[in-house]
Amino acid sequence: PVAPAGVSIELTSPESYAVDNYLLNQQVSLTARITDAQGLVWKDTDSQIPKVTFYADNYGVIGQSTGDGSALLWTPAAQGAYVIKAVATLKNGAVLTSQMGSINVVIPATGVPTVSSLINLRNNEYSTVPWTYNIFVIAGAPYGSLSKVALFANGQQVALPVSTSSAGAGLTQYRFDWLPSAAGSYKVKAIAYDANNVAAASKEVEIFYGVPANATPAAPSPSQSALYLSSPTLNPIYYYDVSEILPGGA
Image 1 (tube, rainbow, N blue to C red):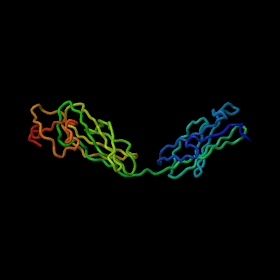
Image 2 (image 1 turned 180 degrees about the vertical axis):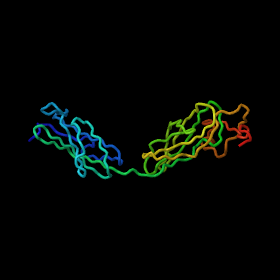
Image 3 (image 1 turned 90 degrees about the vertical axis):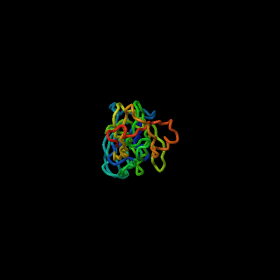
Image 4 (image 1 turned 180 degrees about the horizontal axis):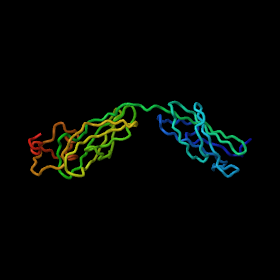
């Protein structure tokens, strides 16, 4: 049997002759289209769009979908390369076979993200109300990539990065702008998550937002970031002597 003139099948995901990469246990979307000479989705003599069966050369039948680009979702059970094709049998017995496409399934790289200490924030720091903290952290996953970096205070996420810049060696500097919702003490840290949802956190810093009116400003710590020291107007935080605010001193 021969298919009607101009009717053909095309593998659209993965595309013909393409190689798509997936992580193990990641869903793969397989699609194909049966079209006429004008490129329109074709219907058989029963006015139905033919079913499409997907095959992998080292797996066998994967499953079925419809030849209008509807997706068959498949989760490969093992790593390796899979050569995919789509096949449709028409009412007159003709068989349409697509060109080949490939997917490559790999095991995710493993490791633990790298996270620096918080930059532009020091332990026991005091600030007036209201105040927006400009906090920086450097993070990365040299073995892969990060999916998220977030700022946490007292165990709750309070900010996502407002900007990023390269820090070299596969690392990125993240900037957070955070205005606390209420006066009080906050234990602040940044947490980075990699593509496998493995997390690593910066060293936690405790800050005090809102200070007594009689507190006396103190000089910034010599260890304060170069950003502050080179241009105080970028972040003119007021520092206070802990002993003047906490009973018994620090």
